Image 1 (cartoon, rainbow, N blue to C red):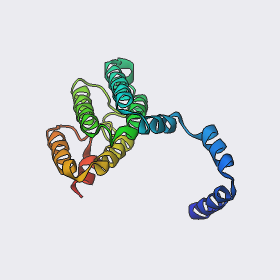
Image 2: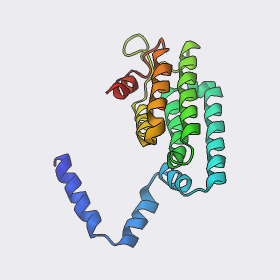
Image 3: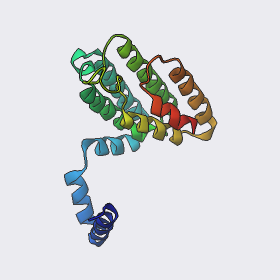
Length: 178
């Protein structure tokens, strides 16, 4: 069965369900990151800052954990989990989240310089960790920014990426250049 055929069948099935049945499916199968994003989207300003501060502390802890820094897949999973908590806050705290993303990119570069985050087949394949999911998150964030700050932020992001000696964010640079 082709993917489009399968998608069409799934869409037809979901369309036939009641609102309550759809809600139950979401509650049963949606990942925690889905609920975190919804919680942050409807947070007031003080709750938004609290969520942001908690995610910032968690990201700092991720970079302090040698076990995670030697396990790129787990590092990526945990970092993305924290970023996803912030996705509902993009409109409320765009400058703070933008600065956090820039700092995280710089911290990843620093981790490489210290010998962390290398893939398992070092020397046999691509040598550097690069997360398409994190890159996609950053691209979605940049696209969500209001026009008056988007160009400036994208310029700052490109300046940070241009200073790297590793190809960690190559696909991100390419996407931003399009």
